[in-house]
Amino acid sequence: MWSEDRARLEWAVKKIVDKSNVRICSARSALFPVAFFFWMVIVFPSFAFAQTPEPEQPPNILFIIGDDHGWPNSGFMGDPIVQTPELDLLAAQGTVFNYGYATASVCAPSLQTLLTGLHPHQWILRKNQVEAELGITIPRGFEVRYFEDTVPRRLSELGYRSFQAGKHWEGTYDMAGFDAGTADTFVPNQFLAPGRFFGRPDPIDPLWNFVDTSSGEPLLLWLAPMLPHVPFDPPDHLKALYEGQGLDGYAVLYYANITRLDALIGDILGGFSDRGMLENTLIIYLSDNGWEQKPFTNHWAGGLIGGAKGKMSIYELGFRTPIIFRWPGHVPEGRVLDDLVSFEDVHATILDYAGAPGADESPGSSLRSRIEESSEVPVRETIVGVMDGQRTRESEFLDHPGTGLGRFATVERAAFIRTSDWRYLAYIDRGESGLYKIDEDPFEVFELSPTFPDVAAILDGAMQDWLETYLAVPEPSSGLLGSTVVLILALRRRSERLRA
Image (cartoon, rainbow, N blue to C red; front, side):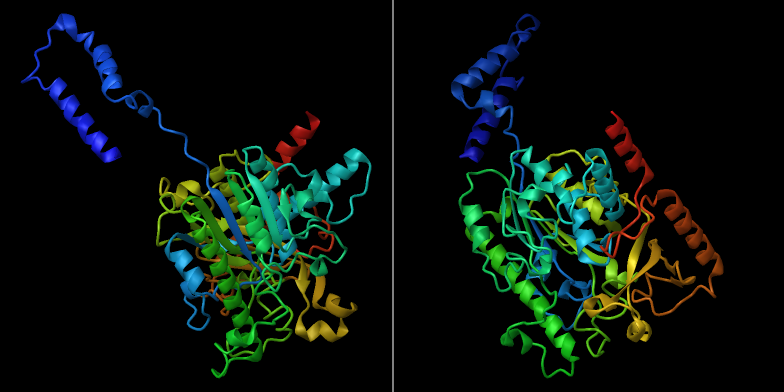
């Protein structure tokens, strides 16, 4: 219908303004636009209203957060073993940032950044400020209720309804500003709390109940299935995909749990497709932190925290994750970018696509212009990170003073700085350091500081300057095991806001 009306409109305009058929004297020409407009309204009543297009409906936002999903272990990232057909399709239909970085190599502080845009040290600073202002002590897990810039709170101001499912360390869903969710109770050990095992084995029906009872509002759906996270308990038919290949036993279980996550994502996207929601939904996928599991290597502590360069480490495998964005007609398909991206940038990007301004305290920058190809400039040139807790080294495990799972973590500061070419890391408390040509050596095997001492010195100086200048909280981060540096400008904005 629209194409037929457009053709008639173009024919009518041509007939009126064709100078070979219509002679218009200068005295009458001033009246022509008015007469023409009223003539068009009479002939095409919708013409008057067609000049102002309807504002575009903001997208639904489906944010899926993997848990301990190592960056190499997906088909679209080149893994020849792990089967991830749903993620591979999602990546092909959208834009992938190859070099996404969590703000810690462990889940809780990284999820805090995604939720609020704050570095983990900023989170602690905010908690300390609130306690000082109110004269109270806030129990761990309750501080988020005092944070204004959580994604669901910001999007609620724009008319969004929000739903949380799966892993959630910050109290209950409503404390963070979600309208509904599976984290409806709080217990000290959130790992064992009800509602945290969305999709494994808890059903995903609460998601559909929320979606199907909505009334046309844009939706924020925050889904954090605890996969491929331990326990490694995949069903037999998924284990069978990896058995008989000579793989390490933990590799079989871990890879099968990744395929389990992939199948769950397929079920979720299938439900969106059945409801006709995929066309106006921005889908984002990333992992909350990294993991190391080589196919034929039996890693020490592999069944709990993976290989030594993965989770809870200062190495690339612990922090890096690909980030996928998909929204038909808005996000280019089949595009892969090598920009360095932080989780603070993901928070800013979600706000941008929903139509909200960035958070004042967050140092993140929206990726939207990069995604939509209106900018050729990456939002950042370096990534700097710091972990206040390190995984216990195998050689020191027997002498560790802790008990139980606590023996696998040691209070010890380490930091890194990464550029597009180099990655420099330092165990600050030990005086140990390493330099790696990260673009050629992504698994940090060949330590090159003796060969390139000038590069190591420059990066070490830049990292130390950054830490000394911008690290807001010098004490260990309250058992969270990880954090990243904060930007002094963001902290100054926060202080000025409080004083005002």
